[in-house]
Image (cartoon, rainbow, N blue to C red; front, side, top):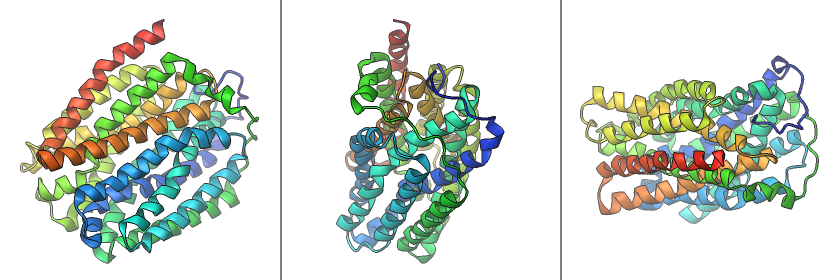
Length: 395
């Protein structure tokens, strides 16, 4: 089954829409950097606001759970809105929220600045994935979605590390101001250069929600929760791990995160190539690679050569699993592709929030060294659950 519903009109040849898909990828870069930059800023935020690293980490949980709770409802309600206008509005909201974060004087104001964009992030991912798939056509839908998800790799490669370096040099507020400027610039670019796709037909929310009656689809969403919980139990505290466990100087953490993102480009490319034919198989393979990288990171942390090798496995699998999970869940839905994609985004953010909580609990009651082991155990649990998902599909 394609990422597109069978009744969706096939757009003109994909090459004509390469520019539009690229614009969505750049917007994704800004959005992902807004969501995940805080991972690199956690140590600086904790010091600047006078709070513990575990409490600062709950800002990640707040963002993630907001996406999880409100994403499907808002996406369903906005599914008929003109895509170009919707994307421009989302970028303007992100600009305002980042400006508010830059001016925050305490964790409560910063929490509000994280809550606002979290409401619209899943709307973007659900509609952008559907729009990219429609523009590219059913035969290239997986690669088109992977191209949009290249924004995640770019954020890992440039956005989060450079933001971390800017925060180290000029303060963490500067990083949020830069994101506000980028968001406004992206909104202007979309308004000027992105054509308006065909306006989607209005569909009742109840009709869209029928996908939740399909146990196969629900099982795929549950699998994404497990996968992303494993990913973010460890990744949320990667900057802290680099500083405190691997002994990386704080001024160099951004460069290490940039290397992690560079490796992720390979994962994004691999994920986009294999997911069309083998969505569940790709999930199993890359989740196992993820587990191996995370579990090896702590014992190898003081041996930088081997530690880098573990980060390579970790980074490739981490980035590959974003498009793999998105396409896998969308393939499992018979209709309402935007809503289906948003359910995966909500599942991912449920995993992100749970991961941040589990990682914080592990640090508080065990130690930072134990985070990789706990994350790997959750990854193995996801692999064990995969045959159950496949069995529901066969039925």
